[in-house]
Length: 108
Image (cartoon, rainbow, N blue to C red; front, top):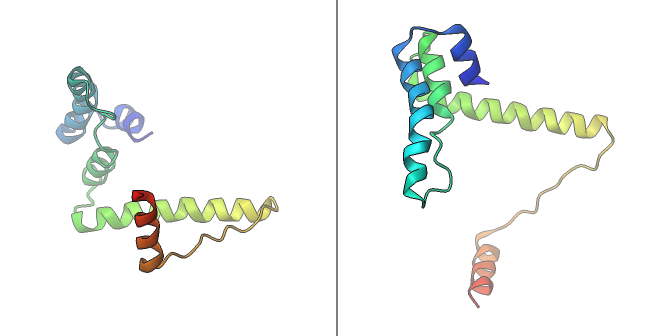
């Protein structure tokens, strides 16, 4: 969606054009190597150049914005789950001792 937005609304930004070219060229080049599972550049490439284009130059906060967007997605999922009467998800808590036991068990 970010790539489509950039194509539609941001025509002459060097950074946006660079990311667009990376998405066009890199998968083909890496695909020829044959050992690459996912040859696509990171999605943050698009979000970063869009934020930069619109004047948000506080680069330390890019990860915070990414985390906030993920949180909004998780919370909206929870709201819909409750609205649809689905069970509340309660993930198990795992301490380090339990985790070490699981690892040892997997090694056997």
